[in-house]
Image (tube, rainbow, N blue to C red; front, top):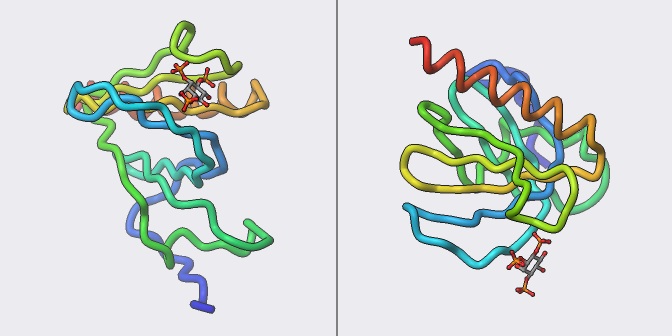
Length: 128
Ligand code: I3S
Protein backbone atom coordinates (compact mmCIF):
# COMPACT_ATOMS: atom_id res chain seq x y z
CA UNK A 1 0.00 0.00 0.00
CA UNK A 2 0.97 3.61 -0.55
CA UNK A 3 2.50 5.35 2.44
CA UNK A 4 0.33 8.04 3.92
CA UNK A 5 1.41 11.54 3.00
CA UNK A 6 0.88 13.84 5.97
CA UNK A 7 1.14 17.11 4.06
CA UNK A 8 -1.97 18.18 2.20
CA UNK A 9 -2.04 20.99 -0.36
CA UNK A 10 -4.54 22.93 1.72
CA UNK A 11 -5.52 22.64 5.31
CA UNK A 12 -8.25 20.12 6.00
CA UNK A 13 -10.99 21.78 8.02
CA UNK A 14 -13.22 18.76 8.30
CA UNK A 15 -13.31 15.21 7.00
CA UNK A 16 -15.62 12.27 7.41
CA UNK A 17 -18.04 9.79 5.96
CA UNK A 18 -21.41 11.01 4.66
CA UNK A 19 -24.17 9.70 2.47
CA UNK A 20 -24.22 11.70 -0.70
CA UNK A 21 -26.13 12.07 -3.94
CA UNK A 22 -25.84 14.52 -6.79
CA UNK A 23 -29.28 15.75 -7.84
CA UNK A 24 -28.44 18.28 -10.54
CA UNK A 25 -25.64 18.96 -12.99
CA UNK A 26 -25.44 22.37 -14.64
CA UNK A 27 -29.04 23.04 -13.64
CA UNK A 28 -30.26 19.78 -15.15
CA UNK A 29 -31.99 17.43 -12.75
CA UNK A 30 -30.35 14.05 -12.24
CA UNK A 31 -31.76 10.78 -11.00
CA UNK A 32 -30.94 10.36 -7.34
CA UNK A 33 -28.41 7.72 -6.46
CA UNK A 34 -27.30 7.69 -2.84
CA UNK A 35 -23.86 6.42 -1.97
CA UNK A 36 -21.27 6.69 0.76
CA UNK A 37 -18.45 9.16 0.26
CA UNK A 38 -15.50 10.38 2.24
CA UNK A 39 -15.96 14.09 2.30
CA UNK A 40 -13.15 16.55 2.93
CA UNK A 41 -13.61 20.27 3.46
CA UNK A 42 -10.34 21.95 2.55
CA UNK A 43 -9.66 25.48 1.38
CA UNK A 44 -12.49 26.65 -0.87
CA UNK A 45 -13.54 23.14 -1.80
CA UNK A 46 -15.61 20.24 -0.69
CA UNK A 47 -13.88 17.14 -2.02
CA UNK A 48 -15.52 13.74 -2.45
CA UNK A 49 -13.60 10.48 -2.32
CA UNK A 50 -14.94 7.04 -3.05
CA UNK A 51 -15.42 5.03 0.09
CA UNK A 52 -12.24 3.03 0.53
CA UNK A 53 -12.61 -0.72 0.17
CA UNK A 54 -11.70 -2.77 3.18
CA UNK A 55 -11.44 -1.96 6.86
CA UNK A 56 -9.93 0.80 8.96
CA UNK A 57 -11.01 4.16 7.61
CA UNK A 58 -8.57 5.68 10.10
CA UNK A 59 -5.71 4.21 8.07
CA UNK A 60 -7.06 5.76 4.90
CA UNK A 61 -5.18 8.76 3.69
CA UNK A 62 -6.95 11.27 1.43
CA UNK A 63 -3.68 12.73 0.16
CA UNK A 64 -2.75 9.43 -1.46
CA UNK A 65 -6.06 8.77 -3.19
CA UNK A 66 -7.59 10.53 -6.14
CA UNK A 67 -10.75 12.50 -5.48
CA UNK A 68 -13.91 11.40 -7.26
CA UNK A 69 -15.02 15.00 -7.63
CA UNK A 70 -14.72 18.34 -5.96
CA UNK A 71 -17.03 21.28 -5.46
CA UNK A 72 -16.01 24.94 -5.54
CA UNK A 73 -17.82 26.60 -2.64
CA UNK A 74 -17.42 30.17 -3.88
CA UNK A 75 -20.93 31.59 -4.33
CA UNK A 76 -22.51 28.31 -3.26
CA UNK A 77 -25.66 28.04 -1.14
CA UNK A 78 -26.46 25.61 1.63
CA UNK A 79 -29.89 24.82 3.04
CA UNK A 80 -31.66 22.08 4.90
CA UNK A 81 -33.16 19.76 2.28
CA UNK A 82 -36.65 19.66 3.74
CA UNK A 83 -38.67 18.62 0.68
CA UNK A 84 -35.91 16.99 -1.33
CA UNK A 85 -35.61 13.71 0.52
CA UNK A 86 -37.53 11.43 2.83
CA UNK A 87 -34.35 10.91 4.82
CA UNK A 88 -33.55 12.77 8.03
CA UNK A 89 -30.63 15.14 8.51
CA UNK A 90 -30.12 16.10 4.87
CA UNK A 91 -28.43 19.26 3.65
CA UNK A 92 -28.70 20.66 0.12
CA UNK A 93 -25.68 22.27 -1.51
CA UNK A 94 -25.97 24.30 -4.72
CA UNK A 95 -22.99 25.63 -6.63
CA UNK A 96 -22.87 28.67 -8.92
CA UNK A 97 -22.54 26.29 -11.85
CA UNK A 98 -25.88 24.66 -11.06
CA UNK A 99 -24.57 21.46 -9.55
CA UNK A 100 -26.61 20.27 -6.58
CA UNK A 101 -25.84 17.72 -3.93
CA UNK A 102 -27.59 16.21 -0.95
CA UNK A 103 -25.47 15.19 2.02
CA UNK A 104 -26.87 13.06 4.82
CA UNK A 105 -25.87 11.51 8.10
CA UNK A 106 -27.93 9.38 10.45
CA UNK A 107 -26.44 11.44 13.27
CA UNK A 108 -28.03 14.84 13.55
CA UNK A 109 -25.03 16.37 15.31
CA UNK A 110 -22.75 15.21 12.50
CA UNK A 111 -24.73 16.90 9.75
CA UNK A 112 -25.11 20.02 11.89
CA UNK A 113 -21.34 20.23 12.24
CA UNK A 114 -20.95 19.83 8.48
CA UNK A 115 -23.57 22.49 7.80
CA UNK A 116 -21.83 24.90 10.16
CA UNK A 117 -18.41 24.22 8.66
CA UNK A 118 -19.54 24.50 5.02
CA UNK A 119 -21.55 27.68 5.75
CA UNK A 120 -18.48 29.15 7.44
CA UNK A 121 -16.42 28.65 4.29
CA UNK A 122 -19.18 30.01 2.01
CA UNK A 123 -19.57 33.13 4.21
CA UNK A 124 -15.83 33.71 4.31
CA UNK A 125 -15.65 33.47 0.51
CA UNK A 126 -18.59 35.90 0.18
CA UNK A 127 -16.56 38.47 2.14
CA UNK A 128 -13.50 38.20 -0.08
O1 I3S B 1 -36.71 12.03 -4.67
P1 I3S B 1 -36.99 10.60 -5.05
O2 I3S B 1 -37.00 10.36 -6.51
O3 I3S B 1 -38.19 10.04 -4.35
O4 I3S B 1 -35.73 9.80 -4.53
C1 I3S B 1 -35.69 8.44 -4.21
C2 I3S B 1 -35.31 7.63 -5.41
O5 I3S B 1 -34.21 8.19 -6.07
C3 I3S B 1 -34.94 6.19 -5.06
O6 I3S B 1 -34.36 5.56 -6.19
P2 I3S B 1 -35.21 4.83 -7.34
O7 I3S B 1 -36.08 5.88 -7.93
O8 I3S B 1 -34.13 4.34 -8.26
O9 I3S B 1 -35.97 3.73 -6.70
C4 I3S B 1 -33.91 6.12 -3.95
O10 I3S B 1 -33.68 4.78 -3.61
C5 I3S B 1 -34.40 6.88 -2.74
O11 I3S B 1 -33.41 6.82 -1.73
C6 I3S B 1 -34.71 8.32 -3.08
O12 I3S B 1 -35.33 9.02 -2.05
P3 I3S B 1 -34.79 9.61 -0.69
O13 I3S B 1 -36.04 10.14 -0.08
O14 I3S B 1 -34.18 8.46 0.05
O15 I3S B 1 -33.79 10.70 -0.92
